[in-house]
Length: 309
Image 1 (cartoon, rainbow, N blue to C red):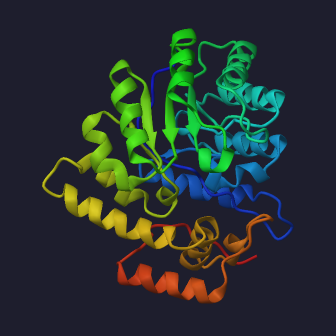
Image 2 (image 1 turned 90 degrees about the vertical axis):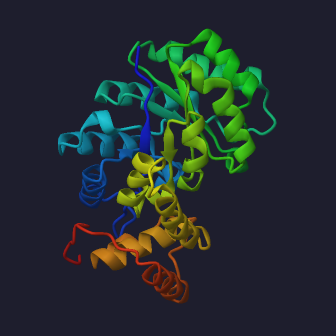
C-alpha cells in the first residue's frame, strides 16, 4: 500500500522550444530548482499544459527527469486522460518509474456523465494497473472538466479501493467544498490538497495535507515556509506575503504570465513559449505584472540562468 502524501507541490510548467517541442533541459533545471526548495513536483497538471502533451511526450519527460537524478519520490504525475487506455499507460509508467502517487483528472470530453461512469473509469484503471504501489489522487476541477468529483463518488471509491485512492486535489475554488472534503475524509487518512496556498492557513488546522498550487512554480520557498510555519508567530505574515504574489499572477493569464516571468528572471526568452491554443503574454501585461512583482519584493533566488538559444 502506498503512503498518503503531504506537503507543497508545484504543477510544473512545461517549457517548449521554438518548434513547440518539450524542452527537457529547461524542464529538468526548473524541477531541480523546485526540489532544492523542498517542494514536490506535480508534473503534467493543468498549469503544465498537460492537455496539450501527448502520452509519449509525458513518458519521455518523466524518464528524462528520473535519469537526471530528480528523485522519483518527489513526483506526482498527472495521468488522467479522456481515453481510458491512455490513462492506464501513463499510470503504469508512473508506478514503474517509482512515483508514490498519481494525480488523475476524470475523463472530460463527455459532459453530464454519471458517477457510475466516472467510478467505472477509475475502477478500470486501478484493476488494469493492478499494483499495490499505486496511489491515486482524484483531481476535482469541474470548471474545466464539467465532470465533478462528488462526495458520493469519493465514498464509493474509498469503500472499494481504500488502499489505492489516497486523496484529492480540490481545484474548484470553493472553500466550502474543500472544507467539507477535509472534514469528511481527512481523519481517515485521505489527503486533501487545496489548489491555492491562500487556503493553507484555513485548511492545515483542520487536517489538509498541503497544497498543489500553480504559483509554487514561482514562489516555492515562500509557500514551503508558510506550510511549515502557518502556526508560528510569523504565520500570518507568511500567509499575507504568499497571498500578494498569488493575487498578482491570478490577475492575468496565469500560465503565460508565469512563463514570461521565468523568461525575465532567467534571461532566457525561450521560457515565453506556450503551446497553442494558449498565447504568450503581451508586452504591456508583462510590464505591469513585473512592476507589481517588484513592488511586492518578489525574487527567484538561485534560479538557473541559461544562455539564449
